[in-house]
Image (cartoon, rainbow, N blue to C red; front, side, top):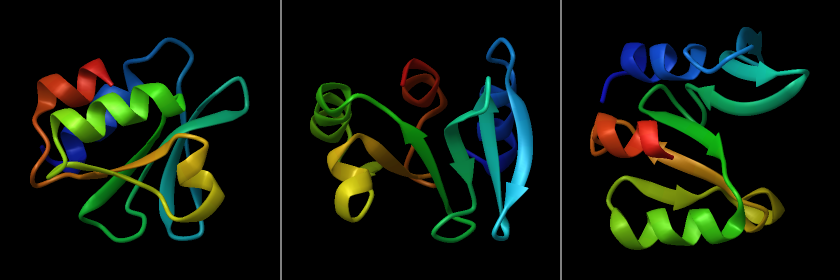
Length: 93
């Protein structure tokens, strides 16, 4: 998965808008961030999942998904290692 493909997937969601925040891109719908790109660095992205969804993706692809640090991760914020992620699973997530 490339950053360009991740960005295309995020912007394909109805009502999705792109903005920049602290040197990375955020994607939101109705003012709520659902994904970001380039944090913690350019090889990573983040998606907001429900904790039970996060657990499923961590089991399926531990090489591609990991919880974000701290309370964000406990609440479902999930990091994606782009180089290991496949487009089909990211689209599903």
